Length: 279
Image (tube, rainbow, N blue to C red):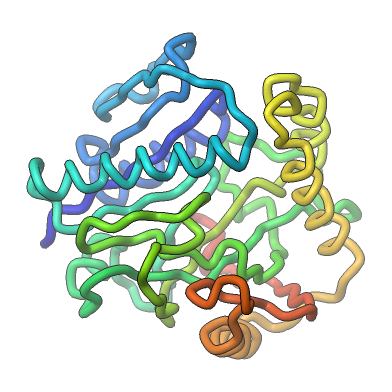
């Protein structure tokens, strides 16, 4: 089994971080989790015990500059883990993103990645999970998310090269690797849960720490996912994920040919029951 680490950076986000620690700790071991807190004013939660944490000096910036700086820093940390700590694979995600191997394979994430043939990076199909307002209530963080949320938007924005096998430089938001192409793995999904609860999104819209750094538009996009899912008829998972994977692999935006693109069509799917207990 290869040595695998996971890295993330957070600020005032215990709700998702708790789930992140729980999930990746189970999959690759808590001792292999590296959490960077954006600001020395942050407090490390008790549930991070057993992980490696670091409080980084915060420099409040507009979201565009902040993201470039954040991912440059995390890319450097991933390189250190590989060059100095002996890790062969590093998973980089935001705290609300979960890399999942399809449970129909009956194999763990660590085992799947350890036997992968990739040499630079691995991308998973992006699954933006959202609340269906007519049938789903407020999310309960103590229960599996996918036990409470059943629909998602297959979104190229979350099809990210989250797994690296050598030191590289991630672009903002982990959305691409500078100077490298991508290939979407047929058995990996990146579940994004930022759109999982409308009440939570509305509360964030009133958070001045986020608004003052230009993140309001980004938060509003999450609410649009919820309304999109609520108003659409969900498509069948297997056939649709195969189709969209092909689309994203071969259709690229002309302004970023090493990133996937969905085109204008919105693909909403029903998440299979086999995923319900994983995250």
